[in-house]
Image 1 (cartoon, rainbow, N blue to C red):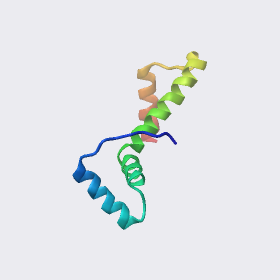
Image 2 (image 1 turned 180 degrees about the horizontal axis):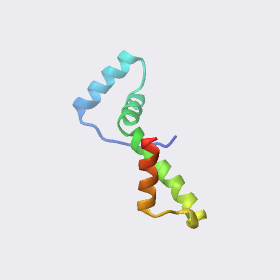
Image 3 (image 1 turned 45 degrees about the vertical axis):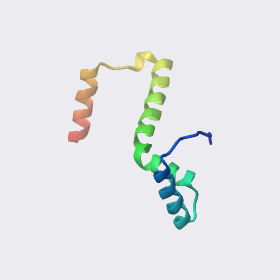
Image 4 (image 1 turned 90 degrees about the vertical axis):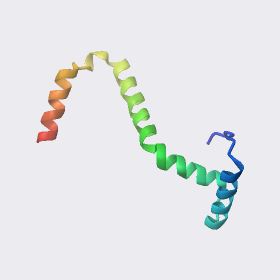
Amino acid sequence: MKRTMIYLPEQTHEGLRKLAFEANTSIAELIRQAIDTVYSEDIEDIQDMERELIKYQAHPESAIELEKYLLQRKAHVSA
């Protein structure tokens, strides 16, 4: 886990403090949960893209033209 620092408006911090108390957790955990809720799909997409790029860099000959890919995808979805 990495450490980071953020600045919150006083009103936001106070609200989070109360929520954290009610949920018997920390403000940091509430923030992590909120980030996961909002950004987890985007983060997964970036990780998938990075993995695919590594595969491509290792075997660039495996790439196909966009039109061929779209046809294959369309056929796969229709099946």
